[in-house]
Length: 351
Image (tube, rainbow, N blue to C red; front, side, top):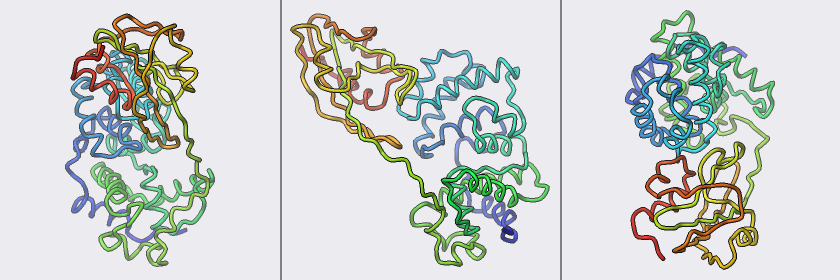
């Protein structure tokens, strides 16, 4: 499959003229800052990432500060951003960069992929933005742009098709680009996918590639990309036991696996009966309003039960600790747990 003519040159010119230039992580060749932004932007919107990125840099201005910080501090700052394995890998990666690389990130995509939590597309972005390497990113947005541009109809549920598309992406790169050209090209791919060649209602009339886009020529832009295998969404109910006493809440650290891995949360039970059976004799619990929590492949319904007691209630579950509400809200909490606890910090606890 031959690449469309002058794609790279058009993309570079378009990005410099009409692309995004106000993102807080642009204009730097510091691999720490680029890496941080790329990890945060995985499956997360730019508008959400902006504030987290600023707070993270204020607390951890460089890879040394991040590596030296306790994991709990990292998880606390990440709280609410979701996909918490990213935060755990971020911390692990910082320590590897310090311990194995003297605090310096590798300067090419292949070596960057050896670091924890850095996949091929993230490695390519760091290498292109920071070191001018001639390598193409290939995240979900870019795959959508390229499959439409090339009318590439192979099934991206198949590894073979993904690898072939990555090879096609490499073939589209500019010849002998300067470092600034690689920055504009890489950012241009991101900008085109994010602002023009969107998943729904693409703005083909504003696209600089309209006349060379094979998907548009076929009148079938919406058919690309093709991916037949989809992960089925699961629906689950979790019962949360929220015990409060004298301005404190009972929290436990979650196991190292699962969607809330290593975060702090109230005891979680798989049924109402199991929750009630965990209470000490005579303890009264009151059900609260259910909370919906949507994840990529899972739909959670959280069913909180409250225990407000002048005496310290005791559960029969695993170890935990009483944490003052002011400190609890500074921990790494799942977003819906934070929403449940926040009102308690703003008003007296019921007795």
